[in-house]
Image (cartoon, rainbow, N blue to C red; front, side, top):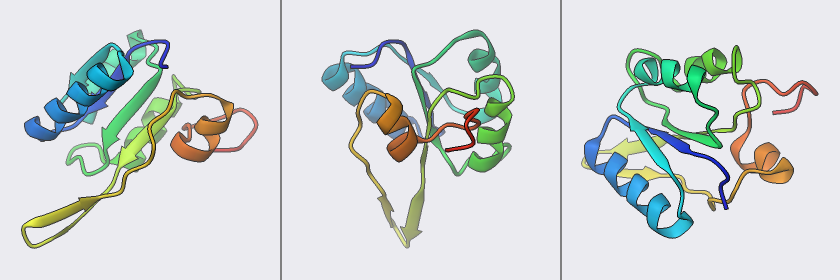
Length: 120
């Protein structure tokens, strides 16, 4: 179970609403949403999120750049980047089992932008 709020960064309103609903219903967690990585940075500065779930295909601040930016002030916060491959009108998203972050899941499933021990 998550011990604090989860932040979802997704610019597609339907995907944002669906993911937030799943987390609220299945994980019983407080969920906040943002439609852009740039807009989310200030929230992340003031709120210690349990995990950040982010659409990697953001236009102004793409996923990898976002992870580096967050790492400057929240290096231990796990970030799950959602990567999509689209072919025509179909899109497939890679999914991983969602579990509360801990030492094992942080390293193997979610990763964090800047662990002090050098692992991600």
